[in-house]
Length: 324
Ligand code: SF4
Image 1: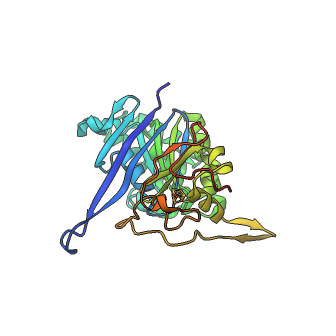
Image 2 (image 1 turned 90 degrees about the horizontal axis):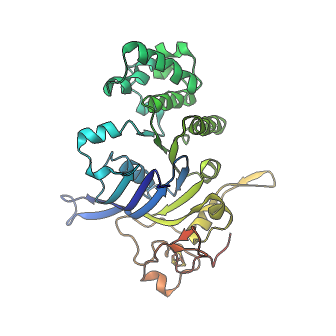
């Protein structure tokens, strides 16, 4: 079966500082990124801030235009669509952001916020929309009487439920969750993640789940893609990534994740600073921080290649040499 979403050689360059700097600088925010997501699957996209993961989420929905590359959704090349066709396609493709308050117009009631996408897309009669509003509130675990209230009257977790109801209003098939639970307290975060999991099963959804938090990614993903400085450095099944990571950056990320040790939470930072995206290092982008870097790493970029002949891939000249 063909994947629901396929992304090939996606690239986004930003030109920065044309007038202020002597010469404009180009940042490759997303550099030759390819992946596929099957129907009903969750692909977790993880990396430090600035690695390009949020840009990938926006490119996939064409909220920003790629510099190069193909995006195919259910057999349709999204880049070939005219604006009106893309608007119609948006019914299938939704996004949930990190900051629910910023995403919700404070002057609209919850009911208006959830019904608005149906109005914009001309779906249903007022009575049908009202019925659908009840269904959506129910789906996300909010009471009917909440419809008349305003976003500021809710907690962060409830506001995220409102955003989820709004994203579901048009019956989408694919949702980008961009740090969708990251701003919430840990216990509320778990509730929102569980809600997203339940909705996925119930409504047959497919997710691209973006997070800097490896615990969240491990909880929710089927497959995982790790990005560093705009590039995919490792891609594989959840077990492969978390149990047998092959790329030194993934290993560093996993080692830096907080671990409970003798009742205390310990963090280990990744050695070295993240290089400037304006001036990425030549060769392997991770070489300035990699404990096993050698001569070749400073000059030759490693291609994403299969590890142990399977679906697991890593972009490292010495993939698998380091172990967790
Ligand atoms: Fe480290 Fe070299 Fe592998 Fe890059 S290619 S991750 S520098 S060993």
